[in-house]
Amino acid sequence: MDILFVFLLFASFMVVMFSGFPIAFVLGGVAVLFAALGTFLDAFNVDADMASLRMIGFVANRIFDTLSSYSLIPISMFVFMGMMLDKSGVAERLLTRMHQVLRVVPGGMAVSVVLIGVVLAASTGIIGASVVLLATIAMPAMRGAGYDDRLGLGVVGATGCLGILIPPSIMLIVMGDQLQIPVGDLFRGAMVPGLLLALAYVAYAVFIALRFPDRAPAKPIEAGREVREVVLDLIGSLVAPLLLVIAVLGSIVFGIATPTEASGVGAAGATLIALMSKRLTWSGFREVCESTGTTTAFLFALIFGASCFSVVLRGYGGDELIETALHAIPLPPTGTLILILFIVFLLGFFLDWMEIILIVAPLVLPVLTALGHDPAWVAILMAICLQTSFLTPPVGMALFYLKNAVPDVEITQIYRAVLPFVAMQIGILVLTLLVPKIALW
View 1 (spheres, rainbow, N blue to C red):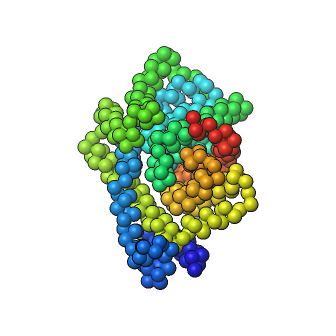
View 2: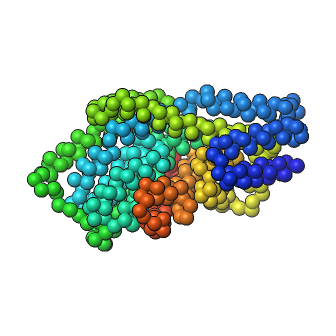
View 3: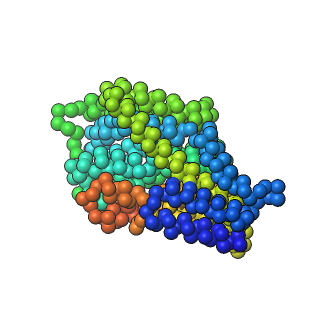
């Protein structure tokens, strides 16, 4: 009976999801429906001292627990920080200044985009926002500089996905809350793989520029400007955002502040930067607040729905069924880990990261921990897997963000453009798998 209900639960979720309803309502609606069904049929796998009638109460309690979770507060603060920095025009100014300095270097414009992407990832943590913003400001500039679309699209798409790994990643915050792993540990663990990916992207861009100069041409310094003047302009543009990133991430990494406290510092610092740029108006501030509220509400609706779904799944004994099935696989611990990572990779094609982190990860992590794997290491590997999945053709989510931002290119062009970057991500995943210290320093 347990197997039947678990199968029907997942089957109903998949059918309704592909009908076009918002995923948050699909998860929550299916969860409430099956909670009522299980209560009526007395089908829940609960302890003897628990009445099956309490399952709907469990669903309501999970929503309340999510609302009162201290560790989820940084989500709204980091979203506000990213929105405010976007409003201040930091990214556009940095790209312009970096291009003026690096234009003499082969592939300099692509290198600038990667560096800006790292700054955006460290200030927003939202994949879609980074991809769209990078595409909007970088693609016209790269085309104007004579860059080949294949290199430009690949760099923009791959760099926009760095928000998954480079702190303060919204996904890592949710992952830490759901898997009971300190968010600071996840931030530290993801930092090195994220920076290694950025270095790989830079190396690839420079290689392409040297090998095929016509695809990424170098340009001389603008007439009438000295190198010293251009460099000073760049330094002036970098100081404020770098100080903000160092204040936020440094305080977390070195244990000076909790992620919640650091997120407040980030939100206040981003507001100060926007005020100093003289681009923040009252209407702009209100727009930032509205966008933050909308984005936060969307994220929390997903958390509510997925959390309710997870509670009902456990009520039917789904966690025990999955744990038993994984233990029965005739593979060594590393083989089981690789199999689960591959499944997570495939799920990333069809599900948003929120459903995977809130439903799948809590089910498989106890099994992997029992096999001797460090939970923080496993979480970072899952994050890299999801990042790779979001960029992999034909249905990687980042590809469609990029297509919407650059509508004049064919989706097949984007597929070809991102393949080298997918290979680099797989390489970093394998490296982190073989050398756990990369994520556990």
